[in-house]
Length: 194
Ligand code: ITT
Image 1 (cartoon, helix red, strand yellow):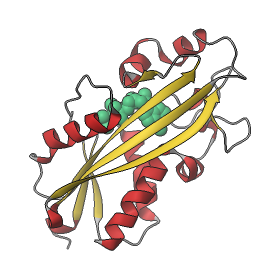
Image 2 (tube, helix red, strand yellow; image 1 turned 90 degrees about the vertical axis):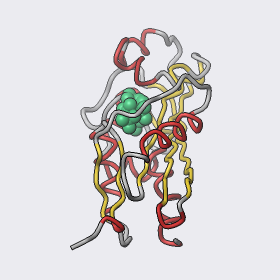
Image 3 (spheres, rainbow, N blue to C red; image 1 turned 180 degrees about the vertical axis):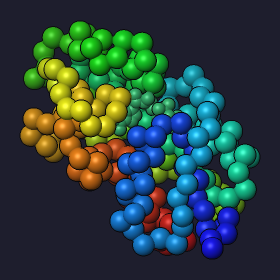
Image 4 (cartoon, rainbow, N blue to C red; image 1 turned 135 degrees about the vertical axis):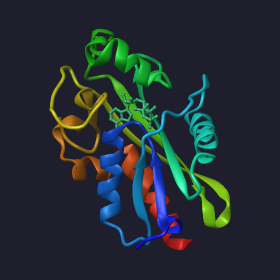
């Protein structure tokens, strides 16, 4: 029977984010058990994903008595939207959605977009916080394609995969190249060392 020391909580309300991370965890030999804690975290109006992730963590870590992490992610359409929706990704997805984003774009071939994920970890054994970052570059698809994933996945075509959106990839394929997968690789390196 594992005790609380061996548990790491992923504090998130988003079951898709949790499932992606769970898959990554299953592939690694780390002496921790991953659990989801579905807790609404407070987000702040800020210019930086890192700042928001740290704020979310500070707010959440007092609620658990073991190592835990939060993740803050965003979708940035660099060309032609100068980074919109970025830190407002969640709100924009709920309001105008993928259709709304597509309506704002004329030249899809020229478009540029990226996702960022910052994981903020409170690591109990060292009683300290750590940040891990991942980023993936791509462009916006002319139309909504694919039924997997969540959020902006059906309109994001990563540079590394020819003409397929994230929503057309299996979780394992997305994880290999995604912002979340990359942030996780960094965190896993850290957990193996500590
Ligand atoms: P928690 O804060 O509870 O973890 P959330 O869904 O609010 O869940 P974020 O603030 O990190 O998570 O993400 C903001 C939005 O960005 C999210 O709701 C999605 O619409 C979008 N997003 C984040 N990661 C994504 C991904 O891998 N694929 C597609 N869209 C993503």
